[in-house]
Amino acid sequence: MSSIPSIPSTSSIPSASAVAGAGSGANASASVGSTTPPYAPDQTAAVTATASAGVLKEYISFDDMGLNEQVLRGVYSFGFEKPSPIQQRAIVPMMQGRDLLAQAQSGTGKTGTFIIGGISNINTELNEVQMVVIVPTRELADQITKVALGIGSFVGLRVHTATGGPPVQEDLAVLHQSRSKAAHVPHLLVVTPGRFYDLLNRKAVSPATIRVLVMDEADQMLEARFREQIHCILALGWPTTTQVALLSATMIPELAAVAKSLLRDPVEILLEAEQVSLEGIRQYYVEMEREDMKLETLCDLYDHLSIQQANIFVNTRAKAEWLAENMRKRGFDLNYIHGEMDVEERRRRMDDFRLGKCRVLISTDLLARGIDVHQVSLVINYELPIQRENYIHRIGRSGRYGRKGASINLITERERRAQLEIESFYGKKILDLPADLHIM
Image (cartoon, rainbow, N blue to C red; front, top):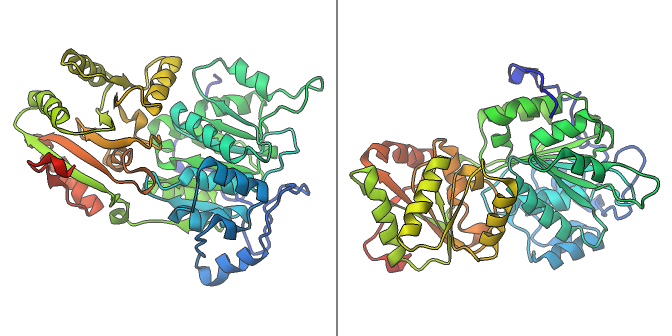
């Protein structure tokens, strides 16, 4: 991968004039140049409804959004029945080309929001990349790709995932436009920051063709390991017509600063911290005297709980491997995953978990963001997260899309203060686990 120049601080982020959304101003168009998507939605009524008095209209049905018929077919065939709250408010503004800053609870349909809204503004008759979604992990990239292929199946949407791990030559082969081949270049590219920066540097992707740029889990992308790459990507010079959407379940000061600099006249859908507490998830804790008592407590819990599928979170690779080894010795059928694992092995273990072949998956915070496995009914924090914001992402692995779920924190007296800080931040009391576990 090409070396990345040093960018010292948030102050170096390009101004809105350098990287801005297409939706600024009352007369902004969602298209780039003069090319119009062949299935452009009827937006006339929706524009007035969402713009009046600065109040967003909520669409209680996908049928009311003015979606193109083939996009709508894809939405329903993928399994969506009615829009979630974030989808009710954000899809139509995205269809109109508006920039978006959205905060929504985990498992409430953020992916469907930007896929439906984004592909409504691209032209699948063109043989070029027109939409890019940047994500922090390859697992999330794979998941978004599956959603996009499903929703875009009736409009001929081509999607490619480009993440670290596989040789970059594989991505270059897919993106190369050859006159000897039929149209094949993906319309939508789902990428991790490092690989995307590499492809941009190699001129395999041109900012000039990108109509929609999405950063999912945007707060994590501004943490130390991604921040410099993201700043370099944004500084490469994007058309003022590029529509930009930033989405996350948590809103941090760094993200607010980037949004102010990056977005032009955005639609903002934000929640207070106490609104992000995932009311559908029952939150409990078990306190013990010593760290070495956690393993026996965890095994005892599994002997008494009826669990369909569960995530167990730890903070380090070493702890994930140690815990998996010791639980297997006690007869538990489970697996583990972490960011330093071989790419194909990570994908295999994740697929096994999604398909239900593995009921329990131990993970670092690699899986805390956006991974959607509907059967997960319980999350156990063997260790509380180092970053407080990751708590809400972790427990959000259960209770996906309005389903009921539960979380249990295993804490020592030393960790009690950290849990109290979590309770205070989210305005949600975490209860002592009851003796009668049948209520779980």
